[in-house]
Length: 81
Ligand SMILES: [Zn+2]
Image 1: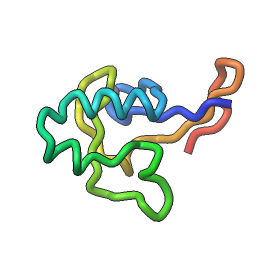
Image 2: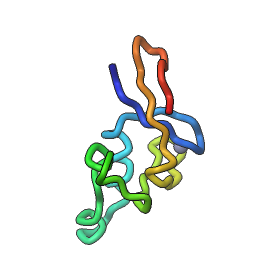
Image 3: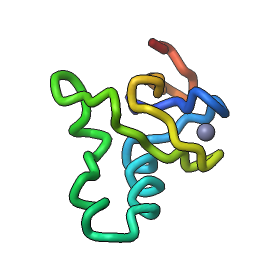
Image 4: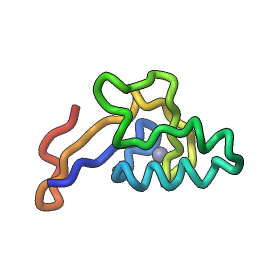
């Protein structure tokens, strides 16, 4: 079962890796890369409301708390929160 993260703006679903890659591509200096928190480590207690990620589809920046987590099973979304 794959965990996917949904963009609140364009409703497209991407893996955490895809969000990371799109966001990191915008970090063009060392300072920004140092501050970057990979999507997979920003869950639970480490979640930062101020963390922003760049959507791989619409290229807009969205706050971590606005990104909806979904589970994909047999190409069907069975749970969204
Ligand atoms: Zn989007």
